[in-house]
Image (cartoon, rainbow, N blue to C red; front, side, top):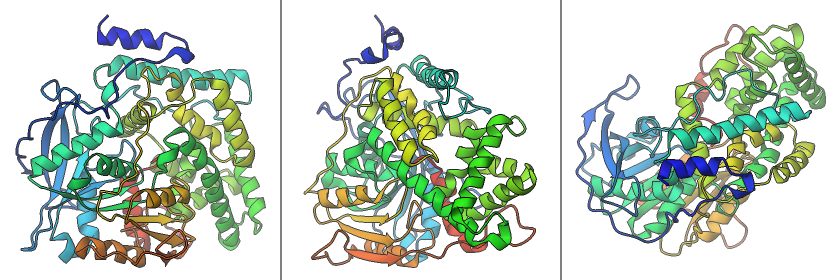
Length: 529
C-alpha cells in the first residue's frame, strides 16, 4: 500500500482507530549536510524599503536528509552597525502565521541603534505562506454562513462534525506527503538549518505565542545554538494542545466581560447601559438575532463570535467592535457590523493556509481525545462557565478528532543547558494564560519572568508598553536581565497600559495613532495563536 492510500484508508476508519505507526520526529537520526549559502534579493515594501528575501531548501523528513526537499521563505533586515550581534530570528506564532513581515516590524520597533546591530530574520515555517509546498486543506472552510457553534440540536451538531471531518479528509487527500512532517519538532530542526545557512554559530530569537513553544523546543534540541531568546506570551508546554485550548475558554470569556464592562463604562457614547451585565445581555441578544436572521449572507452567530474574538487578544480593537455592536443593538444598523467582520474575521486564501497549518501542527504534535463524547462533555462544562467562545473553539479544533495520523507526543522543554532566557507575560492574557509562563520559567534554568500586572492583551513587547520594551531592549543589547526574585513567581513587574478611548465622531476605519504599534503587531500575529 503506498503512502497516499495508507492515509486515505486511515481516514475511512472509526475515530477510535485513527492511528498510524509513523516514527517520532524527535527520534535521533542522520544529520543533514550543511545548508547552502542564502542568496538575498530585494523585496522592499512601502513600510520596509530595506527588506530582503531568500529561500532555503530543507529536508521534508529530517530523518532522511538526502531525500525530498521543501522550501522555506525567509526575509531579512540587514544590520548596518559595525557592532554585529548576529541573527535575530523572529516568529509571530500561530502555528500558521507568516513571519516574513515580522522582520520589518521588529527591526522598525526596536531602538534604531539596537536594530542596526542584528540581522533581523523572518521566516515562513514549513507549509506556511510563501514556503513551498503551502498547505490548504479545504479552501473556503470558513465561508459564511457556518452552522451555529452551539449544538442546540442534533442537526447542528452533526453539521459541525461533518465540517471538521471534511477538513481532516481534505488535509489527508491534498497533502499526503507533507502532512506527516508538520509538527513543531520538524520546524525547530528547520530553524537550525536556517542558522547554518546564515553562517551563524548561534542565533538570538524572539517568539510570540506559539512562537514561544517553537523557541523552547528549539532550545531543547539545540541549547548550544541559542545566544539570547525572548519568549513573549507563553504556551503552557504541559497542556499542548487539547487542555491548552480548554484553558483559553475561561480567559476569553473573562476578556469578553472586560469588553462589555468597558462599553458600560462609556454608556454616554454607546448608550447600551451602564451595568456590564445589561451590556453583556445585549450582546447575547444580538447573537440570538443573528442566529434567526444572519446579516447579508455573511454574519451568523459563529461569524459574530469570530468577529469579537480579536477583542480578547487586543483591547485596542474594542472601540471598533463597540461601535458596530451599538449600531446593531440600538437601531439594527448592520453596516458597521459587516465592516468589522470583514476587517477582523473574514478568512481569505492566506487565512485558509494559516488555519491548515494550525490544525496540521496541533493535531500532530500531541494527543487529542478520539471520542466525541469527551469533547462534548468538556466543552459543555466549559460553556456553562464561559459561554462566549467555548463551542466556537471546540469546532475550530475539532479536525483533530478525525486526524489521520498518530500524535507524536509533546516535548519536555525542561532545560538546564540553554543560556538565560527572558520570558514576558500579561497576567490576564486569554490566548496563553499566565500559568504557562510560570511553568516555562521554572523549566528553563536561569530564565527571568517579567509580568505585565493586570494586562489582558496577548503579546506585551513592541506594542506600546515602555516598561516591557525596556526589558527586551536591555536584554538584546547587552544580555542584561532583571535580578532573580528571592520569592514569588515573577522577577520583575510592569504596569499595564491605559484602556482605549471610544472613537471620535466620524472615525470608523483605520487605526488610532496612539495604538499604532499595538495594532500593527496584532495584524501580524493574527488570532487563534
